[in-house]
Image (cartoon, rainbow, N blue to C red; front, top):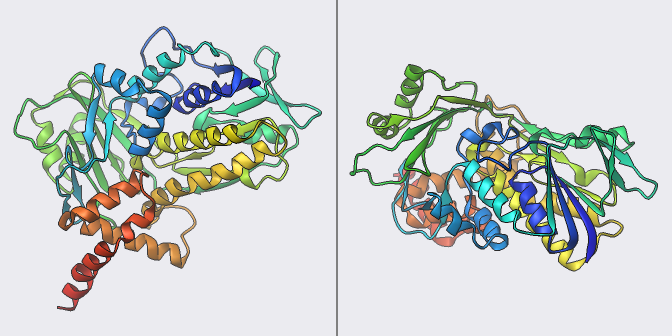
Length: 438
């Protein structure tokens, strides 16, 4: 077992990384610039915490693997268990998705409850020490091609492995340049998504046939999206967003008027009998951004970057936490086979680039359908695959197989090949080719 690992950033990615590293190191230090251990409030480093955070099924599975008590603890605190096709009602561009037991199950709650529940389990692990209120200000390059961390007070912190989990505001690109490494290439795709979210006490109506409601946009025609997302204490998070600078308002009248012009009236109707329980929060997403650390040939031998510090996604697709979990799982797999030795960290960044490529493609492909999106357009083959996936989504109201396969792909529990099932291909031919020829 190796000596000491350091994790910078106490986000969900940082907490999961610390948990995994505790299986491979004698000591793990988790450094967090915020102070949060004495309360359950929103952490300063998560301005998006008041908005909807979807934990995809694959992300849930990985969290459960390393925190076996997580689901039980969350459900005891009021989280909701959701079958994403039986308990959720989806309005797709071509109609309502079918309702049936799909086995695509995760839980819904606030980001704050999820993060705090994981943190409490981390605090039970004696190997992990959390140092809160500590600011890292720079990297220091050591002679052995390793780095150490410099604190605001000028102290240096050394570790056999240092992991950056500081999220979307990571300073790693700048700090690498400061010690002589090249700045990573950056890919950006921005569909100009803005969110307005409000907490409501659930409507007392008993006749609704869903626990969660999602009204998707209609590509090119209507960019507006709406969610009703169940959280703890019998409340909803109601989120409105749009693509292409059609920003949802933050005033009462404007919020409801925006909801009225979704592709279905069902969300607006549900709000008529619900009681507002918060102000309306605005969140301006930064678009999707990916740093290509895997391309840097010379890399510090004791340093890796993980989670949102590598890639951030359009929050609409709910991929951030699951992508971070997939990266942490890849780190665990590598540590089971090898110690931190020469080229380990560089090999990890290359592997991580492959891991995040799937959520990146799944998310950005939809964004790039909109002419207002800024970013490099896909090549012809990728565009053909994207168009095929869109056809599968449009088929979903008529096909339980298409609906389930599409959700399995989006939740990353099956590879994208699942939507190329022969039966789906046949249904597509019948619905989009034969009927068109008629």
